[in-house]
Image 1 (cartoon, rainbow, N blue to C red):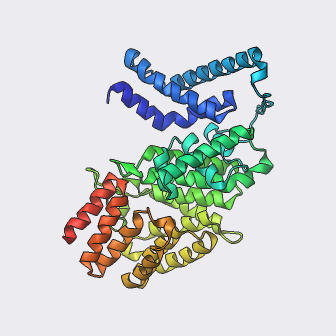
Image 2: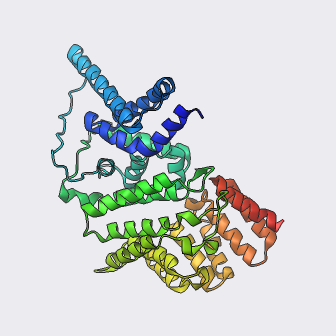
Image 3: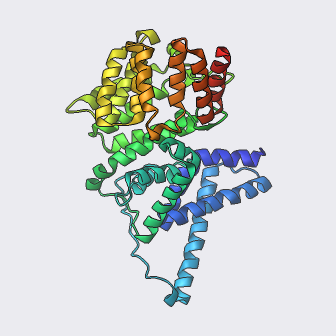
Length: 409
């Protein structure tokens, strides 16, 4: 890529949410704001190629997007003035308070996308697309659906917003808890997409993961008494603490069992541990608190073989009751394999193969392949590795699976 192309790509990763949030402040219209921001990035590609990359790319893009928005709104006002009979009455514009409840523009936009008039899935998908700039194919992978299905859902959500004239205003304090679960889910999915990139040459996108971690911190500052907020932050901290050891210098995947635990971020793990204690105190724990407890148990073990797999299985049992997900059942099967052996876990995996929600989930055949390999069923394991390869888009994970397959052959 040229220097201008690299700068635009980097600015898209780092600045998309901030630029879009600033533009929404002007337009009060997500669809128009997204269009103006996309035009600003296109303008940047040409302008930066001619005159060089500015010192503050984010500020340049924000200014360009706001100018695009103001021009579009002026054209719309002219149209309303000149052709009043051809347009519908304009909705009353919502005035933003001077001292908003949510002070971080990115987090504010997350709450705006998580409007209760939309389905929970649409709220999360829309947040990932508009606020986080995650591509539609990657969102589809996160939701385990086809790309065309996800594209249609995003289009319907935008049309509902426009047709119902939903005011994307800041939620009042009393409204925050109602939107909290969707916000937590969106931030978690954002982190997951960064922790292991669905596609591409790198195992992770640390910028995306750190963006999610920053949002979780801001959210905890906003709602310090919400145990699930503490649970989410703990979960992200415990997983992100391993980032330096998940791949080698030349980009090869390192399994959890083989990672150098001495190089993990112990300060982050200690913070996560304190947050888990807080999240588990005072009633039945939620799904993020339970996931965080599992992650902290993994991180706290001095070695992989010292992990308390029996307790992890119990936590997955509790998590399955709070959040009955096939992915939870798959992760539980891994714990079962460490407690009761690979044969017991394989029986659970074979039951999960009938769940259509996991039909495109590459980790299902990957886990099955590992269990079959441990049982000495090399031919069956090779078939499962081939299935996993066909469903995996991340180049680093593909290389690992291909290596396993080559070993068997």
